[in-house]
Image 1: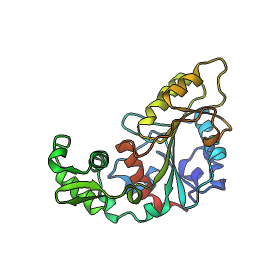
Image 2: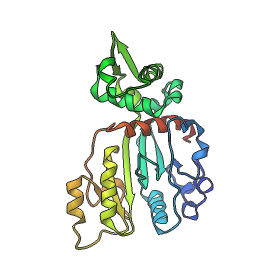
Image 3: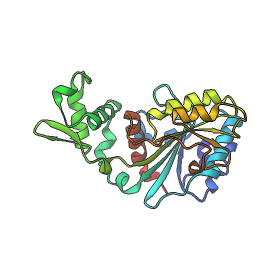
Image 4: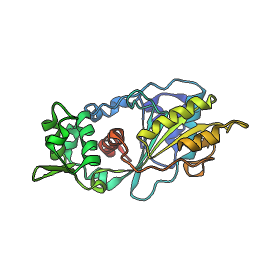
Length: 263
């Protein structure tokens, strides 16, 4: 098990290493411990000391769900997803799928992952159909994806390998934490739905007399208070199928690359 307090260097995280649940936690402060993630562009915003970080860490410490048999957990603190930085991303992923990944997947690049997602949603697809959307380097991307056993070519038609064999993530949970300013947090949580299977707004307590609950329901965002675990939220989020976007695939590659670090 990773010693989170030593890796991350914040007093707020000192007790995380004592969790009965074993998980990886990665942030800007221990990113360099995972050099294999460089090619595929994992980066973070450095957590700021203060009440919100303490709140986030206390929630991780006390409210994680039990790990289903055959799965593991990886937690990302403030990863960069395009121009967004969700506070917490919790991923439950299948051990066997991650373990069976081809060693050639370590050679993949971000544009390869974009092409993979396109083939997953549009395939079976021919090369001429892909070229208008991928103007350069498409042949190299196809070669790397094929070498990595993620796609296959049958008589000039490209399609992905079976999803259950290549996509390890079972739940991809985004959480936006706010001490106050719930409307800002709700907007950010809604933005996180473009890659997650479920998205939550986390607050110390639910503000009384506000329109939060109704607005969250309309947006498909779950609402959590301090002591509620993900399956006991004030409002349940919309549960979407994944992968939803190329960012879902990025998280898939990151956790698969990191599987050797899990205790």
